[in-house]
Amino acid sequence: MSTAQKPVASEDILGQKYDRCLADLLVKAGVGFGVGVVASVILFRRRTWPIALSTGFGAGAAWADCDRSFNPARIPGTRIISESELQTPSK
Image (cartoon, rainbow, N blue to C red; front, side):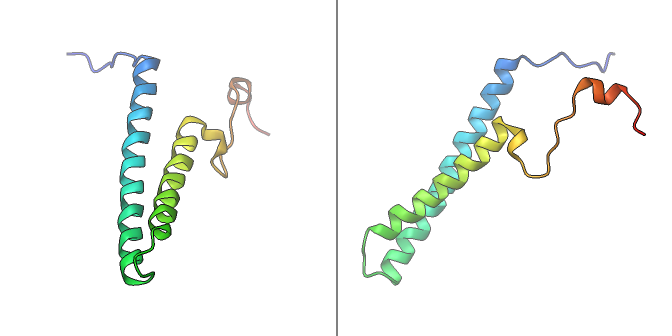
């Protein structure tokens, strides 16, 4: 029995990233919505702006995570190494 895995198609990788981003958006915006409802009822006499603000914060956090997923060079401290740097011995 062979343990070699078949290469994954780039479309599948892209689809997985989009699925993760959508799930992350739903969770974070939902948590923000819940926090906004609680804050609106308890602290702000049933105003609507805390709900919109906290939902926006959740969606913004999901957007930032998705952006890092699609562009790993934007992660602080990440260094992109080229093929030629990998093949030459460091001094």
